[in-house]
Length: 622
Ligand SMILES: [Zn+2]
Picture 1: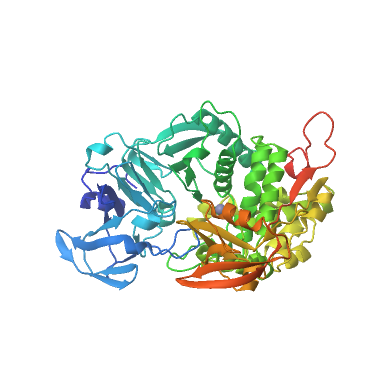
Picture 2: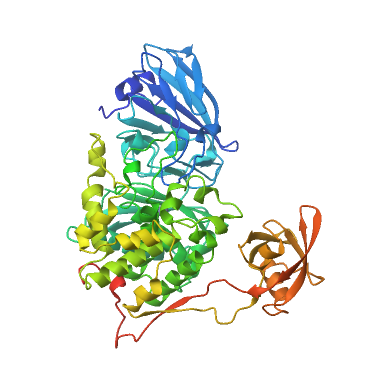
């Protein structure tokens, strides 16, 4: 490919013929949240070029219909209009033309999440899945993108952060970038704005840490010092000998908001959203829950650089972006990533073992809260992610299990099992390394020739046995394909970790989760078989009074707890509630609070130093 663009004008025909596919994207209307995209196709399909937008973004398993944000779309060639026929919700076909086909469209970008696109006077962010049409038949060709500065005084000082390789652009500058194919084009999100940024190296690879949004007095030095340790720990986990990272550079792009949490993984970057209060301040030395959670998020998305971005289920080896892609393995790709995210924090030394065990206990308590875990296995939960986990409703705690949280306990349980049965010689780390060597290391090189491979649906069990000598069939039958709880108390006993049941003092409870709704106390979830359910109450009912006394406190949960605190388990109370606008009066027999409150502790710490438990151990020290 030529390394020159003949003109700076948006998407010129000359440039397109040099590059085959040239996208130009410009923030056109900041206040109206519109990107203008121009796509020049130098050699359109003689039968009429078909283009489409993905219906989902890899990493977030839900059909999102990004094409609904395309406001207007038209086609031309040689300055003349070309008919564009819509074939279905996200696909168009242009009339046949002999010279470069130009498709122009606007994209409405007002979704402040990591999954779509956002644009206003403060910044722009987009994922390729939301803004770049794929050109059918040319998906494997190089895709050039001209990222243009908005014609607006507010954008004079904007910079660009992306892991897309530059073609003719300075690092952090506007200009042309290039992706090897469409799969790569949509896997390098772009942030533009007046962001804060710091750069560090992890085992020789440059990492940019970009923060968009106002955080007065943020301690960026502390953040990058901690994140660097996490990155180096992970690189060394997968490549203990060479310490070779799978990418040439990496970009963390963080959007800071008043209230929000989430992240999406990519092959050489991640997009994160966090609370302003999660980030540490310069005069603040302690480890807050918010900052620990933020580091866990960074760790999680970074771990995906190996696990799911390169080691993939076979179903994701070639994404079908037109529809759901089914796999029953998300308990491994999301669950193990959730297991390792916190484990990497303790191995990197950014949290201690006591804090780590608190996080594990929190996960166990979350998993055991819902009866859905007795009905759906994590394999089923993975398969149904598209319609169940990603489309949760008020009944979800009674119907489904999370392949994240229970999947992380499966990872922990397998790790402890392998360590115990191999007498400490092997661990889940060895399994991850074999997965990496077999599927991950060369994934994108093989993709270029269509020879990429992913983990088959039933391959894991044999791979574990071949790697560690431990047969895990029974474990998987019970806890992955079946719905049994992972027996962590028994498994942890071998490692001197005590599991303490914290439910000794049961308080009188209705077995509901309530939320504040205006001045009302509304039931968010009514747990199956619990007092409220048995009395005839359900989610969305507004609780008005307990034995004639109105629930009034600002915090719904406190208000209900205070009201129920007057009674003992087994007593019956009268509840007044509204369902829509109709008053309900029911008698509820209070039950003991079933909120799990289990905790973990280390038995008999070793003298003079930290207790290095097998599952916390650093690679190479086994
Ligand atoms: Zn994840």
